[in-house]
Image (cartoon, rainbow, N blue to C red):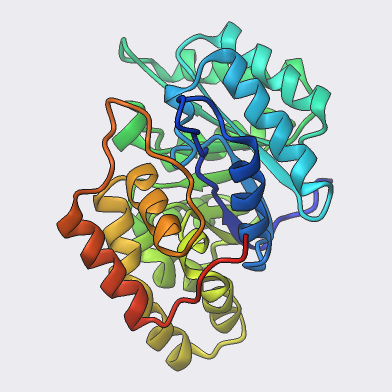
Length: 299
């Protein structure tokens, strides 16, 4: 049985150098900064990591660099978001080859996918490797919306699909997953603005890029809720909520990279068509971080 990850699943950005390629040195620094934030795991090549904008070679390089940098200190999750099943299977096999601990798989659609097509997509990936899989629902970015009933079915019928990440922002779906599975299926919150409610509702963890800018505050929030200290948890949550909302509304790669630069840890610009944060918004983010007394990041 795969050990359940409990706590913060932290998401790094993918730093780019001035010539546009992946900056290996900055990549390692960003990862080390996240490791100091007390994460339960680190998930590379998700939305914050600009995986949709990477070439195949860059994706493989980033995955390998992430595994090598973490070096077993926490579990490494590798994100897979592909239009075709064949491409997703190839990446799953590569993640297994380089020593990743888990896959986070989100189906992506151009044509609207049926549940049968989505199920077969996951089944093919599950058959290709023995790595545990987190089924990831994020209709806002993928164009695919999986119901709680279907997500629970994936876990029940596919042996290596063992976890669910729900990012629709609908707390009722998390309650439904919990009820449908009698609490047996670990689920993870992927919506920053509802982290407090989701953890209180029984989420095993919170998947977020916020530790890049907020250090161990997200981890402390999770621990406070787990300890039943809701008063202190609520106070901490509302302290950090402006940053949580800001980085999502402004786009994770754009805002997190701007915030890391403000903290003295440059991660380059986001890859076009994404643009760097405009000055007015950069100043707003600086004010949020100053109000929280966020320290400069150690390189």
